[in-house]
Length: 291
Image 1 (cartoon, helix red, strand yellow):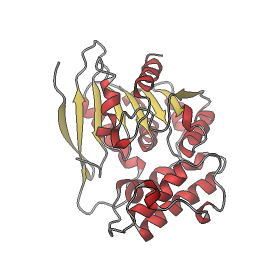
Image 2: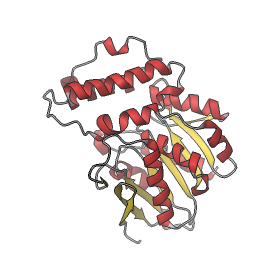
Image 3: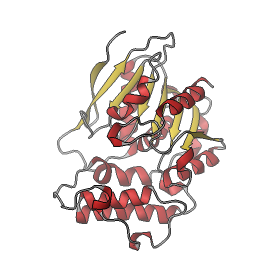
Image 4: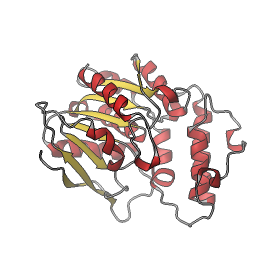
């Protein structure tokens, strides 16, 4: 079997690195696996279940092996990620791809398809945390802003504790969420000391742009003639913010919500110390892609 190759691609304000795993099957269409700000290593297990497909993974700008240019803005917008994805797909020169995108990657992929549907054959958007889509959107966006503010004020451990509390919250976000008590950083095994840095890819660079992004429902609807769009959520995370946003998006697009096994990170097989149900998740994804 051919070995994985890593390629370098210069885009507007960034240098990306992406990996191509050649498949053993006859399907010529690449399968692109996208997260944000998660890097390519998060898809190691999921990619192993698609050995028959050419699988492409990458590190988004500002994460892992992909650097942003000196002087680039600290915060990154989904539109910038979408442009990176478009350039990556064009660099593959293999026609439209099948695209599985999760979390912030799903937000970026929706921005891509709204602009360049001809590059994507099927998009599976898994739990895009577009907070403004849920009925309690104002409260959800305020909570996201509070997480960012806590990070800026108190550092990574305190910010991550708030982030975990928010993303695991069940049901609508209350208006007074910012004032509610949350477990301290040490309860999650996080550091209590502030290291002074404020460039974390999640809390500092992508959180506000990702959660505040409003998918262009009209453009996505128009793209349906070119790109098949599937919006998905985890069976175990249906009441969490990202899954609720997925359900709201599916409703606005007039699509059924695809329910995948496990939770927000259901495809993980121990990466980052998190365990989903990757075998079952991969089977569900294959069924959707072949559908």
